[in-house]
Amino acid sequence: MARVKQGNGPLFFVLLGCGLVWGLSFPLNKIAVSEGYRDFGIIFWNQFICAALLSLICWQRGVWPGFKRDQIRLYLAVMLCGTLLPNWASYTASVYLPAGVVALLISLVPMFAFPIALALGSEKFNWRRFAGLLTGMLAVILIAGPEASLPDRAMVVFIPLALIAPFLYGLESNLVAKWGDTGEGPVRVLLGASILGSVASLPIALMTGTFITPPTTWAAPDFAIVMASLINVIAYTGYVWLVGRAGAVFSAQVAYIVTASGLLWSMLLLSESYSSYIWIALVLMMAGLFLVQPRGKESQT
Image 1 (cartoon, helix red, strand yellow):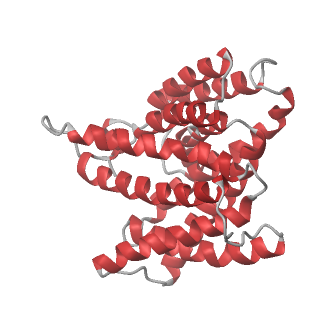
Image 2 (tube, rainbow, N blue to C red; image 1 turned 90 degrees about the horizontal axis):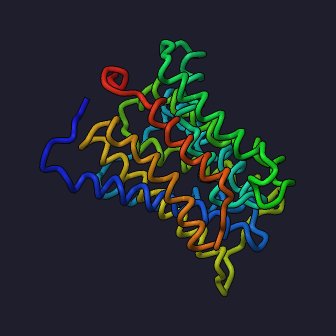
């Protein structure tokens, strides 16, 4: 396990930068759907832009993703569980739920990943991590249960929809951990998945009438889609770089910053306000993240 050594203070700023940038994607998603753009139309352009940017990185490195059977299986898993289906759920939930609440619920990824790992037999039961799972569940109850927790009580029916994304991200992380990256590294894996995602989402967007024709005059949703795509690539590659320099345990702390910054960016950009139940849920979610994340020998592979 890589450890952060004394004198490597700049790594904390990289961690902070990744978290702040990633958190910005939640209000951007809300802006993207604010004037009628919907799920697969946004997903196509997100995947297309990501594929274009990652192609530049691979071109500069002189390496490209392969398309053997095991590699395609991995790309499909990342595409379905890491992009198409969770993004569909997140964009649809963002139409109805405050962006800060969606950001808060996304932080459940490691809490879903733990029971999935138990079910797949890749991890053993751990009481501390189980306590983190229960703490996260209590946070969800505080968001969905009390009548004063959400701006409109009718929003509560969309909470399960928003929970689809962290569940799928947790499944994706387990599949990637089980299969490995087939020796290609995360950038090439993400490029392969983005290429497949572009190919898969285009016909769905056309069939569902959600395809977005690039406008001659851009409005806030158009800029939001492009910015969110850029953020995904920048934050992801920054995170991968950080894992290589500081280790997985240190880098996993980005989840705290993403959750908190998602709420704060939503307050700044969308003028969202939250009840005391949401803030208590944030504290519980942070505690749950602390408990459920692997530490020491648990993080070694």
